[in-house]
Length: 266
Image (cartoon, rainbow, N blue to C red; front, top):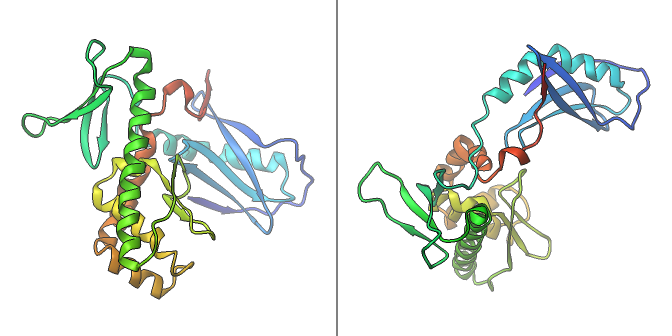
């Protein structure tokens, strides 16, 4: 994250919520986020949504925001260009499932919906066979991963709630970008379906983390002690998420549906 101090007392127009800047003939769109109490202009490239956000003071001017972003256009371009490439759910794409690479294959004439097949030998990827019309492959793969994620998260939650003597909780899976899981005040547990692409110990840790919130609705020492008790590989899972978590958001995104980080070329 790039932080530079900027004082601005000029007026602003609330109707504008984004600006365009350019670097070496390429334009980039920057979303503006006004924050009460902010005194600095802060630029951030979000890997999950592949976009650029400029956080600014409530009374910061649009002109000042555009100038700030333009002065840092090279930084924006470099960060966006360093993002891992998008991998759509199409035949030939290699995607992770439970931490192992799987290549998507199209089996239009076969029956059985969608199924996996182990590789004959390492380091070849396993296979994820999809039997449907070619145009339906992305949706079939997405639906399959969401079903698998929900099934495995429900099993992990049940395991951990049983250990605590609780009844199992309702599990919802969504495509979240800011957090991997959450626990509501009513005890409902929400998770990112993308966790099914991570190694099993990571999914198990996230389930244990949210179940621990049923006892401690905070991140106190007691909460972390309980989480470690439920998931002994907590530290390993946290390290994996820091190193690889953001990459999970690049799978299943169609190139023409990706956020427009590059607006146009000149």
